[in-house]
Structure formats: structure tokens, C-alpha cells
Image (cartoon, rainbow, N blue to C red; front, side):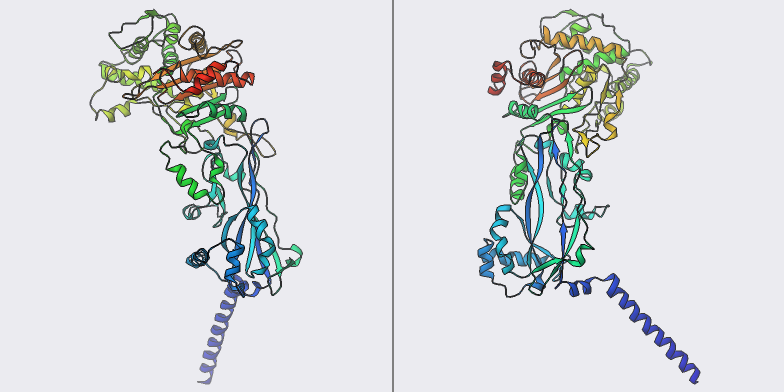
Length: 605
């Protein structure tokens, strides 16, 4: 009997000991609340926020840098003899504002802790910090946390740069890396978002000793547990800042876009979205109020038109049609087609052009006939099946130019555009039969075709390169290695034989030398190859479109310009494109009358 009791007592003793050991483990190792309570009076944990990487233009001009800002932190348990009137005076607050800050602090139920630092006031400027720094010790429990925010050397390039703001709760919840904490800044759009990993750096931490009054007494254990913050990597952009500024000047008061690319590398020289905004508005204390104003602007300045606006391409698409028809061997460069305007409307004094002349004169009838030949090659027993086969082959060539899919630029929110497929028309016609006569408008860049301006500029670069392109990108160098991401050094070839591109180049030169582009796009001392486009926009004025590259030999710049409601492509868009080419090649404007015409904004409709 006694032996049984003895065993019971031993088991109970072991169980009680296990419970105490488990509790001790949780107190000392797992649960840090007690450590916080023990250390809060003597040790202050201070985050060292890293400097975010800088961004420069291709010539080393600083575009994005960091400027200091300060958060006022509080450890509620350490607040002693709080003089609210004096606090309001020093920090320029009303009593109502002070009460609200304390109320908001306690409303953070999950994050709230009386023994841990909590943010009380955010984004104090350098001037505000200078005003209060000598008096911060009058308020035990409060201290300053230094950090940086973004600043911009120019109001240009806002849509491409993007902006940085505090990480949202949703973003924090979805952060698989577990790198971010509440209150951290993160790139929200543009380059800032795409290159967040490279730009953000790595935070550090310092532990400081304090006395009973909360006054700092140096590092804890001589900084043994401190970690140094690691700054983010600097980025060298491909942007020519002078060209970018000039493009934004030309687009002032207009809606549309300018995209300029260096054909030999795919580097984006200018990315203009009109209208735009000053990126400095989305920094500092007024971020929220400014963002609300900008985001509700009916002109949509946050809408990055070069990547997100999807338009009909208009007559510039005829060059892609020509290359496709040559590859499919339904025409030759010498093929002549009578401009019978009873078939489809056309313009200009031409009658019976060959392929070069058809491109130069933008003959609708010619390309209507060319597409009909491509879709009706007699490869099937009926016109409906024949059109399906022909359209599928047409698709494979057209998409090889980069149309109909995202190119993969190093910016978020790029759109695909649309190149219609047999499946698209099956859905559009509810699986009823369709044939060439139902879809012929795609022959002249109208109908269901949609492209984004970036794709237009890339197409111009592809012709300039005689059949290949590099994926357009805005960052040409990252960190010390100063190299782009690997995907931006790979060539992409079209399905078109390179020999056919000479015909396109000849015709595009003819457009500028003696065709629709001669009045506004022609430059002295340099051969410009281009193509005008006037895109239907009934019942509103047409959109003005122009693509070009220059010089003809060893091209340095390829460009697309899209001016919404700008009228004829030979006017607004061609003028802006030629001024941009001139500015890039010669670093100045040599035809002031053309710039005056563009700035006046009175274009032929």
C-alpha cells in the first residue's frame, strides 16, 4: 500500500516539475514579454532603416535620392509626469489632435504594447525635427526614430519611376519573404515596385542603454548585438533625362504618349505619359491627400499610357502587313494593285502603286487586297475554313513583332494589346461561320487590332534592326556590376526573313522624304524613316500616330508618338517625333517653328 502511494507521489512530483520547466521555457525563450518588461527601463531597441538605392539617368544625372524624415516613437510604460500642454506647444498640436493620437495608438489592438516602441507621430521633416530635438528629453517615454523618404530632382518621369509608400496590411499579409514590418516603406508602382528587391536594402538594429530617466547612456554591451543596415543597390536607368524633359514639355496640355528606344540595345530613352504629375507630391506627410487628388483627376495622370493605353494602331500596321505578305509570298515588292476606292475608302493622289508606294501613300485598297490574298489562299474547300487557316498563319507572323502579348518591360501593369485569332472571332460570332469579308478592317490597322504605344516603338526598333528586337527596358545597370537583368540582353527574332525589311525601310524613308511625313518629320542632315497613322475615333477627332527611326544606317533612336484627338498623323505626332529625334541626335531644336506649332496644339483634324 505504502509502495503504491510512494509511486503516485513520484509521478505527481515529476508532472509538477515538468509543468514548471515548460512554463519557464515559455517565459525565458518563447514569450519575450517578460524580457521586454525587464529590459524596457534600461535597453532601447532602435531600428536602423537602410538607405534605398539611388536612381540616375544614362548620363549619371541623379533622378531619385533619399531625404531624411523622422518618426516620434513612444513607450507608453515609460511616460512620466506628462505635461500635455507643453507637448502640444512643442509639437504644434491641438489638445484634440493629441487625444486622437493616443486613441489611435490604443486602437491598434494587435500591435499595441505598453512596453514596446510604438509610432506616435510620423514623417516629421528635418525642419520639424530641428525645432523639437533640444526638448525631446522633457518628455520621458518619447524618442525619435530616424529614417528616409524618397525625393526627386525633377518633376519628369513620374509614371515610370512610380512611388514609395507605407506597406499596407494586405501587402504585409501576403509577404512570403517575411522581410517587411508594419511601417516599412515599399515600392508601389513603376521602377520602385519592379526593382523593389534591389532597391530596398536590409534593415539593421542598435540596442541603447538608458538610465531611469530614459536618457541614453551609450550602446548595450558595446554594440555586441547591433547589426548594421545594408543600403539598397543603385540603379542606372537608360533614360536620357534631357530628352525626357523635352518630351514632357512637348506633351504639355495633351493626352497621349512618347516612347523612344535605342534599337541596338532595347534601352528606353524616354517614356512620356501625358498628362503626368510631379512625383514629389507623393512623398512626405501630404502623400495621402495628394494621392487622393491625383487619383481622382479626370485626366488620369496616374494612368501610364505608354504601357496601359490600348489603341488601334492605324496605318503604321500596314508595314507589318507588308512584311507578313512577303513572307507568305502572296505578293512581291513589285506587286501593283489598282486603288479601286469602291472597295474601301482611301486618300491621297495615287492609283496603281507597288509595295513601296503603297506603304508611302498608305493605300487602304492595297492592304485590303493583300490581307484577302493571305486569308483566301485556297488551302481549304470553303472560304470559312480557308480564312481560319490564313488568319492563324497571319497571327504567327504578326505576334512575332511583339504585338498581342506583353513585351516584358521592367515596369508593372503592362497590357497585352490584341491581335485577333480564329478563337477570338469564334467567340465574337457565337461560333457562327465568319470569313475575310467580316474582318477585313484589321488589314489597315483598324477593327479589332489593339496595340500599346510601347509595342509601336518596339516595332519601329525591330524594323530599324532589320528583323529583331531586345525587350525594352529602363534599367541598364544594377549595383556595382552595373549590368541589366539577363532577360534584357536576349535578341528576339521575327518570323520574317531579314531581306524583306529593306523594302519596309525604303518605304518608310519615302514617307518622310516625299510622302505624308515630309512637311513635319523631315530633318536636314539625317535620313529619317517613318510612317504616319490617323486612327478613327468617331464621333470624336481621330488620334494622331507616328513611328520612326533615325538615321537609316546604324539607327540611334526608334520612336512612337500617339496624340489622342490629335487629328492627322502627319501633323501632331510626326512633328513631336521629329523634334524628339532632333533633340536626341543634335542636343538642340533647330526648327523652332515646328516646336511652336506643337506647343500651340492647334492641329489639323
